[in-house]
Length: 172
Image 1: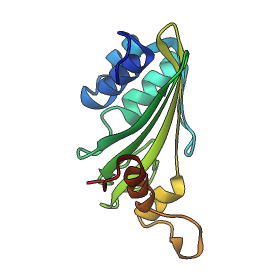
Image 2 (image 1 turned 90 degrees about the vertical axis):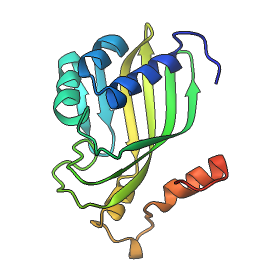
Image 3 (image 1 turned 60 degrees about the horizontal axis):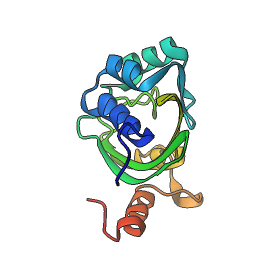
């Protein structure tokens, strides 16, 4: 996708790079976030309010706290004047407590694939807030804490179907 230099999409990409590739809390905050941001993981109500709240959440509960085999599969990105909406799949083995998604749940060793939608609002080319959504019931099915037999919930099937519809190929 062609974008203007320093577009909102570029800031978003830099934010993801600092969070997941470099695992650099300071760079994430100073380079990509406003002075008064907030982060809200909708299904679990985890995140932080204000610079110190987000910094502490990132440092103590999020950045560098993912499974080593975590992989992000990009599905789509929509860039507006002040907002970016990113659709992606996060895949990993639940081999450690994933505090933002499964706070207090001991590792199960199960492999999970979870579609996420990230909505980022920008002010002056920096991230003012993030709303991150996913289907928590699907997570619980995939780690074995929720049985789907008598409920309208699914597990990894939703990621596989999303990738199949988007790319016309199965998720590896």
